[in-house]
Image 1 (cartoon, rainbow, N blue to C red):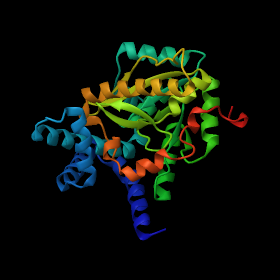
Image 2 (tube, one colour; image 1 turned 120 degrees about the horizontal axis):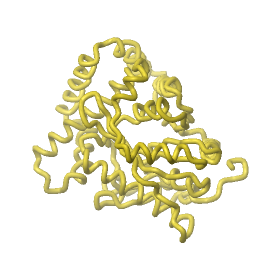
Image 3 (cartoon, rainbow, N blue to C red; image 1 turned 90 degrees about the vertical axis):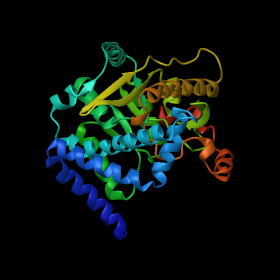
Length: 324
């Protein structure tokens, strides 16, 4: 392990140990100042965030409007990390009472989870999905999710333990075919799966229209629902006010009655994209997309290599028997 990796790991460990002890106002204020400093430096992440937001706000958006939205978006992104450090010590009342969800959306979510079917909650990079997950755990039931294998290893283990500590079943993203098989079994058994699914730049990502441009999104949620009969519900998260989080649960995206497996996956994934686009358009300052997302921003040589991959359509095929 390099010195940089050790330093990063130490920083995350210190965050979980110290920041939960600060008064809430002081903690949020600290992360706002960090966000403002990052934003003022105009690094690559901030510039890419503004390039992404310009698709949402329109190419003719006034520079000052774009700048203010990106500043708020950086504060929103850093708020996620502040709350990640503090969430383990929040009380049940603090978790539950700080969430805003309409009666209609709450009823839709409860009805789906209490049915005999499995349920797939598909989220994007907005708001705080760990807070939303903790709310689901406290008010409805447990669920299974997948965690990206972060670097360095100590940070990955810290996030893995953090989410497990909240009560989630966490599977490693790089766990191979067994991860997909486990998710399928959970859904067939009437369980709940939550996946952050709005960004997939691999060859198996599904092209979708997103704010008038092409992006690639994960095929997994649609594939799993087609194979298991689970309900696919798009979810959008945002911050309606300081200290609060909003949850929007959209109507189920049904499996199309006709078409090939690949066509059904494409239609269902576009349905997810349309729901997330609606949520992002309403709350652009809470979309934390600091990476390249639209295909027009990507290196053409990388796209060509990705498109030529042999397993480009692998996720749309039937799983092997040991995954069933």
